[in-house]
Length: 241
Image (tube, rainbow, N blue to C red; front, side, top):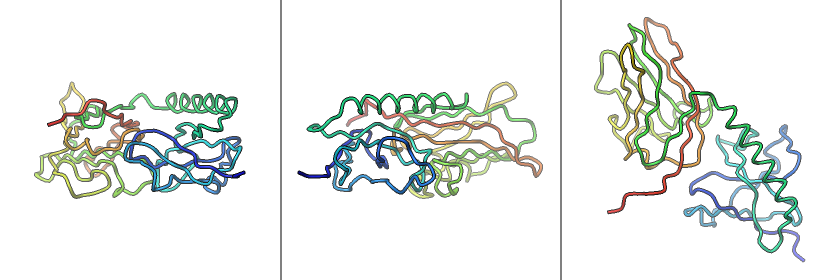
């Protein structure tokens, strides 16, 4: 009788997923028992395979949010193996994951923004004080990530510069135009707004969480303007031609 099996999990396509044995999680050596998704699964449609799982052991699925597995990664559910399901363990694990997800949503700051892939994104900031010289908006998987790894980085200068707009998209400085992103400075009664065009956001990965912030530069000082979480939702209806 085989002592190992292949686990499967369905989710949004294009995610970086891995599994860990269910139960008390050791946060001191988080990456030691990680099993990553196999490359031969049909991940293009959101089907992930995890090979070599131990018989009789339930596994939790996590979405990797940074460059390596970490205890702050997002719990997604449990793997499935149709011919051998322990429904008691499955129910307990799903309840645990639900509590974890609820805690994560409760911890989101009030300035969290939910956007949909393939639509125009608008991130509200705050009212700009007189004398501002430059505004920058950045979103990353983790605050510790390098600037070059940003999901987006948008710049607006005062007075305006032709180079203003989207500077980084999906960790790259190529493949888009600066005009694909912009910051509307608003006025004394309306907040500034960062916008990313729909044609550009169509390439974003759904189901991902990002942290974002905005900074304003004036008279040699740098001050925080706004910050929060950015949640990329999958789109259901897509335009066909």
